[in-house]
Length: 136
View 1 (cartoon, rainbow, N blue to C red):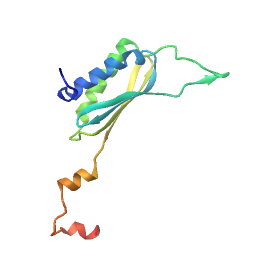
View 2 (cartoon, rainbow, N blue to C red):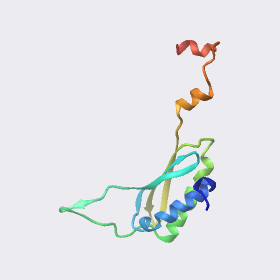
View 3 (cartoon, helix red, strand yellow):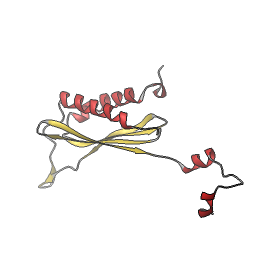
View 4 (tube, helix red, strand yellow):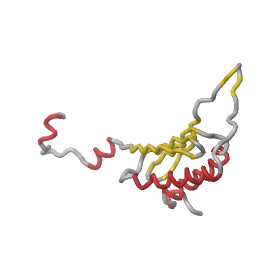
């Protein structure tokens, strides 16, 4: 059985878009997010743009992303991975909207680090360097 950590991040993104296909077909805007830990996607989903309510009721969007727009969106998400540098923990958000029949995507890559891990990797030396004089 293949485990998630054995899949490339690109292949995991492919799986995310496959899973979200039906939901995306009912949305024309929102944000797809993937949370990454050790280069493995854990939690992912869609943050929907606010629903518009009138006269005491919410209306469902009439049209969502077409198959072609979803394919274009997926390709842009894969392309954005080229801009991910060195980090293994974080989140990537893909804000999307349909404009003049085309899907427009803004990708935000967020790296996360843990100070406790740095303190283990770079233990404080008894003979601290000069930069430590400002930090006690």
